[in-house]
Amino acid sequence: MEDLKKRKLDEIAGNGDSSDSEEHLRSLLEPLAKPHLVELLAKLGSQYHSIAEEIKSIASADPVHRKLFVRGLAWNTTSETLCAAFQVHGEIEEGAVIYDKTTGKSRGYGFITYKNMESTRIALRAPSKMIDGRMAVCNLAGEGLTGSSGMPDLAKRKLFIGGLSPDVTSEMLLSFFGRYGDIEEGSVAYDKDTTESRGFGFVTYKTSEAAKRAIDDPQKLLGGRSITVKYAESHGRKTAQPQLPATMVPMGAPMAAGYPQSGYPQTGKVYASMDPTGYSYPQAAPAYLGATYPSPPAAPMPYAAQPQMTYPQLAVKKDQLGVPPTPPMGMGGYPYYGAKQ
Image (cartoon, rainbow, N blue to C red; front, side, top):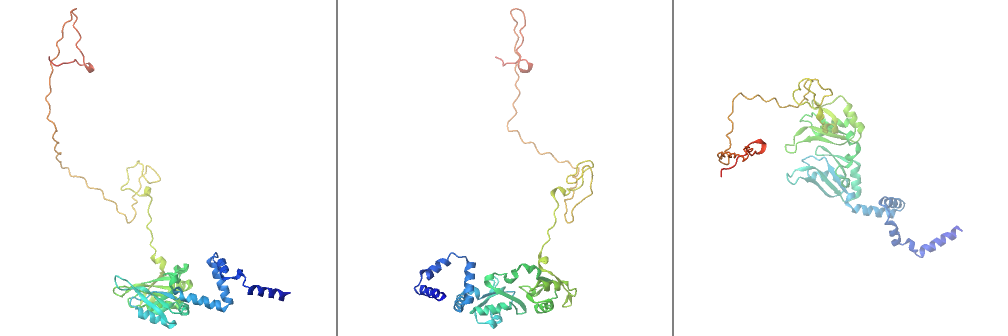
């Protein structure tokens, strides 16, 4: 019975069933999300060698799997020395240090592109490499400029080393701190123009435990000097100055007793000066001298003053009945005056 079913399946496959055609399979794959396709191809590649070789061939043709980003380079590292340090892993297709267009000086990083994807994988097994006295580190260029140092625990792995002697080199720094664990990246900070040590450096360990051991060790003497070791994040963080609320900032000298003080919890009480440290307030202005100052000249009147005109008082005529008439009165009870006819 099983043999019969198998023969029938073989016959169907031989007849070229349209459900197994490439066009039909492509229509089934197109709607699938990328994670599903990756999982499917990985499973097929692990089962069939021919599919695995096809996947490798396509991936190797893309530079994203062959290009490395190298950071932490010394300022005097050239493209030739960079390629010489990485050619031990395989044939290099292209390699160069990136220089600033304005100053013509190295920007401290570069790129390496191998011809074979396998060479890139070998180089990434040991990403840290000593080049021209500095510990450089590499990662796939497609991962961005941060690379492996963009991991969340970078703050617990990267240390700031201060108080270094000018004679301490990057090799001495890495050799001293290598006793606590494997170092991913580190060097002394040098001035770009003078190439002299700036008196500090950085060390990034591969594990946070190694960084903690370096901090906890009380013996920190390098190059004849006592050095400072702490987490790089705590060194670069700036502490903000606390600001008092507007209602609590004293405004100069205290007011007289019994007057409500603005910003204090109680009224009618004089408080001592509470000027915050580091703030200066304007001093009281000195009193003016008892000198007299001339008044500004009066502006001239735009029109000449008109002379006051006088008018004769109207004569009062006697009434025929002998009763003297009442003189006409103006507004406010004042006698009325008219112009002389």
